Image 1: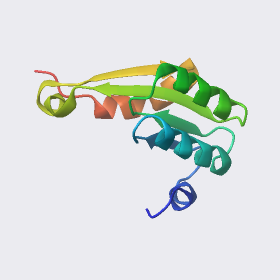
Image 2: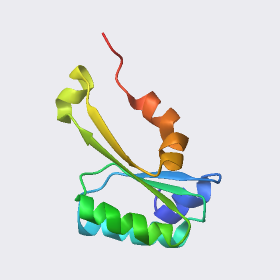
Image 3: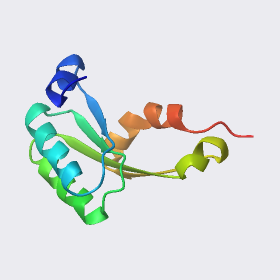
Image 4: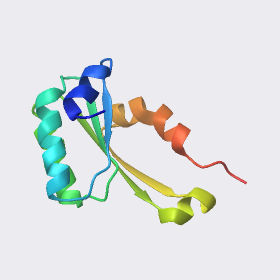
Length: 111
């Protein structure tokens, strides 16, 4: 999609938007935009490599608008496709549970 506005408009609610952009200013910019576009009950997943203190800030920022936040750091690099990767998930249990089907779909197949 050409913009976050278009993305949000195309998703049925309650929405879950997975963000994977470089840590720092780029992530903050996307979170700021999503905070104004999403509605209470929607979720944001940060799958990038944001600093944990930034994740806490983003969670509070979104929570103030009734939007959930889940941090889902991915580790494994290009080797993760073949050997498996680590998905480190943090957030309110209700939000993590809601996203469990997504996390299950992304996990690598075992031997």
